[in-house]
Amino acid sequence: MTAIVDLRSDTVTQPTTAMRDAMMTALLGDDVFGDDPSVNHLQNTIADLLGFDAALFVSSGTQSNLCAILSHCQRGDEYIVGQFAHCYRWEGGGAAVFGSVQPQPLQHQADGTIALEDIEAAVKPDDAHFARTRLLALENTIGGKLLPFSYLQQATQLAKGKGLATHLDGARLFNAATAQATLTGGDVRREAQRISGCFDSVSVCLSKGLGAPVGSVLCGGHDFIARAHRIRKMAGGGMRQSGMLAAAGTYALDFHVDRLSKDHALAQRLAEGLAGIPDLQVEAPHSNILFVDLVDSAKARSAELIQYLKLRGILVTGLYRLRFVTHLDVDAAGIDRTIEAITKFFGV
Ligand SMILES: *Cc1c(COP(=O)(O)O)cnc(C)c1O
Image 1 (cartoon, rainbow, N blue to C red):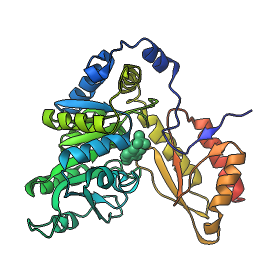
Image 2: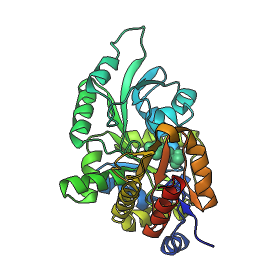
Image 3: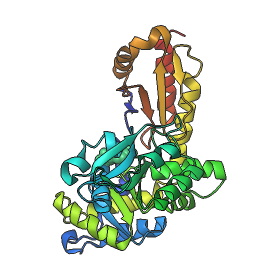
C-alpha cells in the first residue's frame, strides 16, 4: 500500500522517534506547583529566543489566544482584529463568550494586512457609548502569507501611539521567520525575534509545522504572563506532569526550526507543478500553505477533486478554496504524486 499524503494541515504530523525519546526521558514534576523542570525549561527557552520576560505553556493555540486577549483586555473592552484572523473567526468567539471582550473585526487587504487607516478609524474615542479599544491582534503568517516587516512596525507603532496593547498570533511564527529570512538573507531565529519584538505578546504553536504533538506557548512581560497564568487556570488549562509534552516542544525548537524551509520549498514545488493546468488558479505560496482555486468550468468540481484525490491516498481540504499544507511528514515523492493525480483529474 502506498503511503497517505496528508496535505490537510501541518497539525497531522507524528512525533519522530527522537522526539518520542525526548518525551520518554523528560524530567517531570507537577506544573501546577511550578515544579516541572521540562515545562520551565521550554518556557525559559522560548522567552529567551523571542526576547520576552516570560512564557506560558498552554494546551493549544486557541487557549493561548484566549489567555492573551483576556490578559490584555477587561470586560467591556474590545480588540481590533482581521476578519479572517484565527482569534476572531476560528475560535468559537471565545473572547466574547468567556471574557465579555468584544472583537472589532476589520477587512483585510489582499496581502493579509489590515489598512493602517482602517485600524486608526476603528479606535473608539473615550466615550460612554463605546467599548474601550484596548488591543490590536495581528496574525503572521496569515493564510500562509508573510506580513511585510515594515507593516508590522507601522501597525504596532500606530497601536502603541493610541494606547493599545499589541498581540501577535504567531501560530506559524517560525514559518513567517523562515520566509522573512529568505527575503533578508538573515537568520531564522533572529527574524523570529525581530518580528516578536514589535509586539507586547506573541503566541506560537508547537503542534503545527514544528511537529510537536500538543501545545502552544504564550510569551510576554512578567505581569502579563502572571495574568495569563490565572486565566489558563480558569480555562482548565493547569496541567500536571506536562513536561512530557513540553519536552517535545523543546525538541521541536532545537531540531525542527531549520527544516521549515524544506516545507516551503515543497509548497513551491507543488505550485509550480500545478501552474500549467488551465482549470486552476494557483496563488504563489510564501510559506508552507498553498491555496488553489478552481476556475471557469471547473469551479463546481472541488468536492469531486477532493474525493478523487482521497481515493488515491491524497488528503486535502477545501472549505473555501483548495488548501495544501506541507509539513515534516510530506516529501517530494508525495508532492509529485499529488501533481500527477491532479493533472490526470483535469485530463491535461
Ligand atoms: C491553528 C491556529 C491556531 C489555534 O491552534 P489550536 O492549537 O488548533 O487551537 C491559532 N491561530 C492560528 C493562526 C492557527 O493557525
